[in-house]
Picture 1 (cartoon, helix red, strand yellow):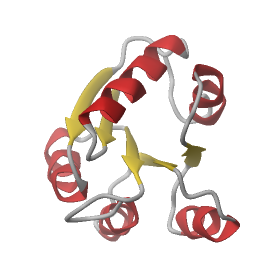
Picture 2: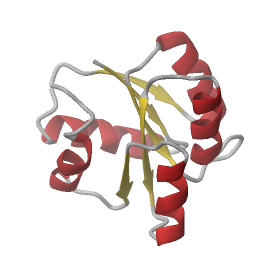
Picture 3: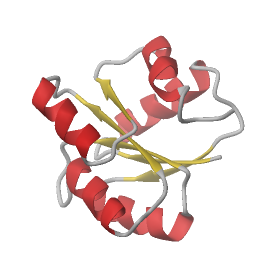
Length: 121
């Protein structure tokens, strides 16, 4: 299964990859993008089944990325990782088609709980 990780922080992308491994998800091919614009390009060219995206990024936010993917009928399951914890943010993401939402900081256990329904492996 191919997973696209979109975050403007290289360190956070590495933490997400490590959390995937520590959560017991194996056999995943990970692709990285440094912002929503690059994420959109890679989603279209690489066809990942799951996209894990930061909410706040330069050039194109996670919400704008999600909207662009849904407008293009991209079938990937989309998840948001953010420090934004309000009910409004969660509702907005889920209403736009996000499959899951994780709050930073996350643990391997919370990562596994959020992703288990959408990631096979």
